[in-house]
Length: 125
Image (tube, rainbow, N blue to C red):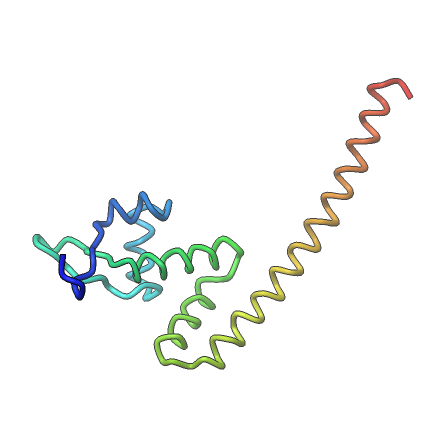
């Protein structure tokens, strides 16, 4: 393979690497979360490692409850090279994740307290 030639991946290979379904990848493409990949023989989608990196990043944002609308806005700003807009969106999302973590820690403490209580009951204390 030539240095300038980049390896491409089929949709099934991307599914295997990202854990997303082919339907999800097609949906993300349809709603402009992901650009349409190059097409190979038989019009088969051919993804690059750059595409896979973008897909993984979108997956992280989605997994941390960033709404698709916000992800789409981030992608648009990224494509427009609006670094300030990208920064602002990611910083806002970081703050949201930190709040989620705090809420989860609080819930974990309550569950821990309840478990201790039930263990004491089981132990006859």
